[in-house]
Image (cartoon, rainbow, N blue to C red):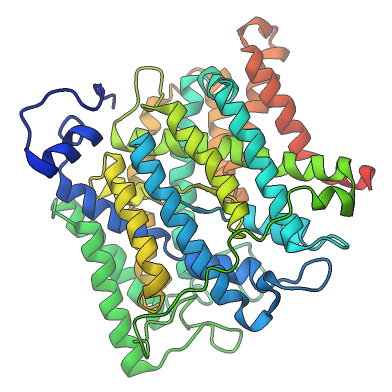
Length: 495
């Protein structure tokens, strides 16, 4: 769907006063939304991605750097410090995205990127966490330059429309798969006889899985009946059910001895709903310390790895969100593309400076779009919720994956419906599109799916003798992706 939007500030006959200002600034009425929908959408997005406040500390707060030290210097307090900084930076960047780009995308520490920082950068010999975060800041500065010079946006505009549609569909399948895996509805079998299986031993054999199924069915029925706030109601309702299940069943956390437990957060009422945050990690960064520790060439390769993932992931995310919201123009581009990419680039810098890893656009924002969000006001609401989380983290910890992830599955379906925008008879385009769609969920990586689509598109054109049909920037992107795919041997060669 294509929607034409006019510039914020255009005179309208909408509401007056402060609500009128919000309506005009964010183009709420022009995009067919309301302030109420934006608020609900922002809250749904927050609930769908709030897991990062718990998960990011578990990834980077529990790993020692190359000197044996933990983030903040103390293993006992590292997780709490990372959680507070994660929520703070996510809140600031989501608000910035909403105010500057006026687009319904929220930001937080990027999954995958944080693992690269923890296990491929910080653990290098003699590398400190401050050095590792300096690498993240350097990557952010470079990608910001690429945006300001117009290069990043030009690459995005060079991508064929069919591949942009495939990006949306592939990400839809990807986030549905994320929902299924994070909930435990799909998991690696203990026997490892197959890559994945249904639940526990091929069956829905635990109370948490039942909560997931009930939450998913609730979301589906409410959505079909067009109930306002359907996704938010489903999350809250499933959380209440999970709370009752834990209160009476004492399910506990999932482990090898307890495969039927909650996957991450246990729905237990905290001793205190308020916790005083510790922001001492902010600013703990050494910009060029990594070069002294591992050498210039190694740092270049590390920066390139982070940069390529950041460079294309956000492109895919903004196309997917824009397509679901009906905000793409005739060429498949969202409004205020430059502003979206600038804020996303600043997110990498802010994430490194905040010691929480690169912050990036979150595809879970599609959950809020599914609830009706169409403007940056939703992102502002999400950001405010993250800021409150710095004090109310015990409340957020009450929402288990099994209650929040059903929304991701339903949103995956909604994004899948865009597949009709691909002409499958055009094999030169549909085959690369197919690779994009299947490899995003199968490799658990947006970047890999994008890379496979780009490389296969260019190779097909070359082998068919249609080199002139390939945009020069697609050649550059393809070369970068090839380097990305062989970065393991390159790292070994560099030493």
